Image (cartoon, rainbow, N blue to C red; front, side, top):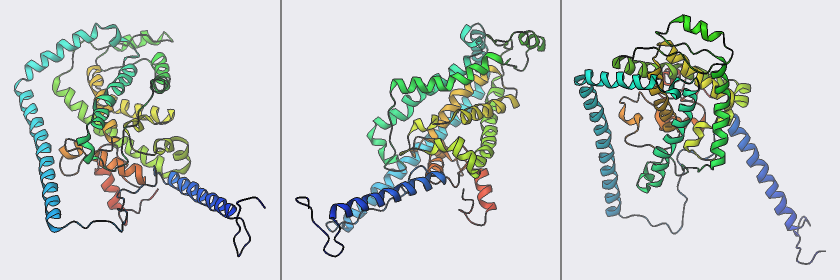
Length: 375
């Protein structure tokens, strides 16, 4: 008998053996729970609303404290509502000014296009790939990282676990290479075809196996058409990727091989946006490109589309319910935003639309109950 080792009086089993068995059993259940969560499309087992821990020393607030807390909450809600309506009014004001100053803004568009057409980097076939990578690189630190540093915004976290997970420079460079590699290869071998470009130029470019520059239209786009194409392309992509996203969750094999990586994270943070397999990333970009091609979008419109598109994707993964978020600014719950997408990551059983909600609600209403379309 080893010194200091005790035995259970009834089973004659060393206590340290019993402890070891319990630990192994708990580890097994934990692994099983994690495996089930991953199969169901859930990111981790933290619930949306965690109940407070019971405490024998908990102090029950008196009526005055409860009244003060209620008053502060109502004041916060009123302040948030004022912020939301201020953003709405600013958008309305900007729309009115744009309509009044339409000719001036069109001149700005014309001059901008003239400068871009003579820029070597804009003429490069790799421009859109570089531009997308650069947009993600500056949008993440400007928006989510800045919010993380301001402690006053902590109250807007959808769940206390939400945070900003820092990335190393090496990791970011690695992600950039992994992202740009496949698309730069496609850029090199594909002839980019834009509307209002002479088809004879495309035929001439097809004679070369490696592409270096892209054939751009001479005329600038109309401002009204730019705005329409941006909105229409976002909505079209939203509908297309809803179908793809739903399929990836419904099919077990495709989910495990293609989409599961996007749901494998401990906490919600902006870099989850880019946590994609190569196949899923290509499908995402090609879906957006198809939406732009459908409306024959001008190269200038495509350039504006990229940062807008990246910002919407990053905002979905911030984990914050900000009063100036689009899901608050756009009325009637038409836009899901970070709140709906957070719930999708936690459960994986609903809210498949990247941005809007109408198709999700349609699918939900077609089901016998709200949670019947379980993946």
